[in-house]
Length: 341
Image 1 (cartoon, helix red, strand yellow):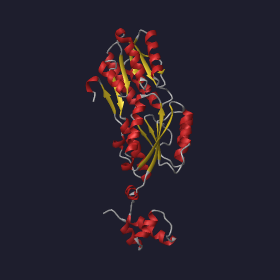
Image 2 (cartoon, rainbow, N blue to C red):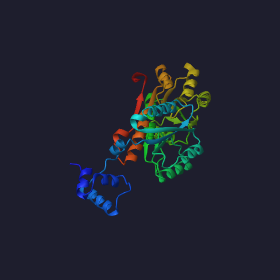
Image 3 (tube, rainbow, N blue to C red):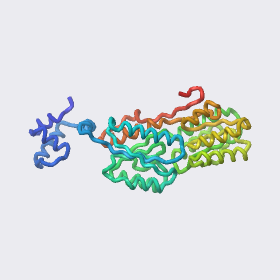
Image 4 (cartoon, one colour):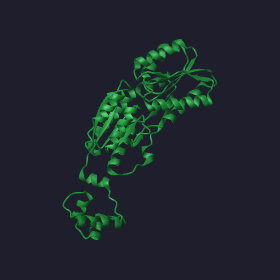
């Protein structure tokens, strides 16, 4: 049977009130008595259920989500999921606030991280930019005692506590296999569109995509990556110019956002060009493009799962609890027009 506070009191020869004071590090207990209680705890192997204690005390978890402010449908969805979590605050005992920063601007993200008051925040979740100054800011925050979870894009090599997102190298390899199989034995060029190479998820997807293409589809040549900065108009212009200037392009991999611009460019060309296209994130725009045959496949991550995972991880860290790895693993889904939910 699991030891209880009653067992501690009996072994130490003190009252339950005294045990409670020692467990909660409150004053009013003589040093010799505190030592006797601590020895009793070690003797009987008592392990405190911190989560239950926090629930009984009605503890709130002040959490901060730092999200990019951009014209990006997936990020709009991520914002919406955090707002839904704010709506569940009373039942989940959280106090969540959102800090918006410009997309792909490391200095703005560093300023947001450095602005957080230590002691007033139980944890931080952020969509990371993989820049040295951001990595240093994350390490400073963790060193000050604030746990950090990265969302969507990771910061490996830092002291962050957890990453809530898909395996992006595997995602890139999956995209390459789909595109290569769809194109069969055709020979030609493949265009890649990213938001920015400043974010690790885009770099890792490109790494996985390029590696598998070279291994298994050498007849397809990868063109230099285009960076659309998650801006639909920029993506539209870049794709349109590339298609106008290169008649060998037969495939496109959109490894980030900017899909509205990509879809617009493809629709403007109409039937002039037959292209095979693989993109990321199932939004209203990519869903419609799948149905219309403008895009052939979409790789998707569940933004809601990522937000819920980040909250669970940060609360567990505050309570001194471990994680259930399977529960926090973010799945990569593949959608064609035939299996849309």
